[in-house]
Image 1 (cartoon, rainbow, N blue to C red):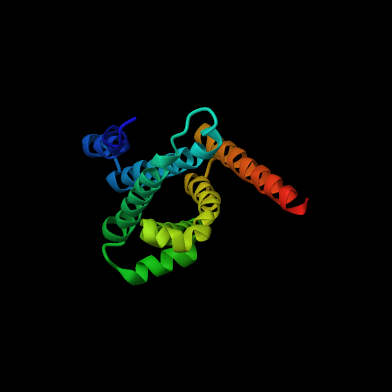
Image 2 (cartoon, one colour):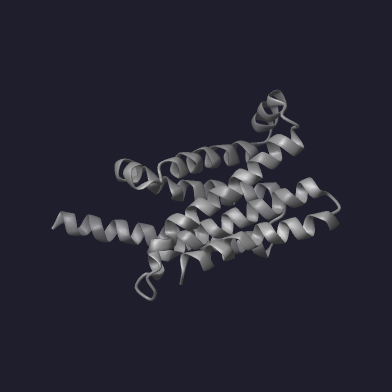
Length: 183
């Protein structure tokens, strides 16, 4: 797979959003939904590359996918800050403190921001252990998304299932590594 093809594929949710937002009843909510779901799906796909590497090794694309996940999370945040809050920092702080799903999203976004900034080769070498926080981000974002929807549907159950699978795989790898050290 070429990077340029993956780049195009990862831009498809944005293209879809730009085309379809005009017909949305509530454009701000629609943008929230599209950018949030896109970010979460790409995050899950990027984390799925590790368990899949024995079948097909696409690990070299994980950084690009992680940055695109951050890109859609940034659009999600900017939608909140610009269109919903209209640059009102007081409103943002009040909403963040009043609604638990928003502060979970803010915490996840802050961690993703740190990871995006430290994703260059030089900084990643220095901060790569901190990039394991991506699993905390995944948990926070899945909870954020489920709380924002208020009702758990098939999509939310799929996200929860994928999170459990990915965390289980990570726990399995940790246990194997720990047992090797113990010997």
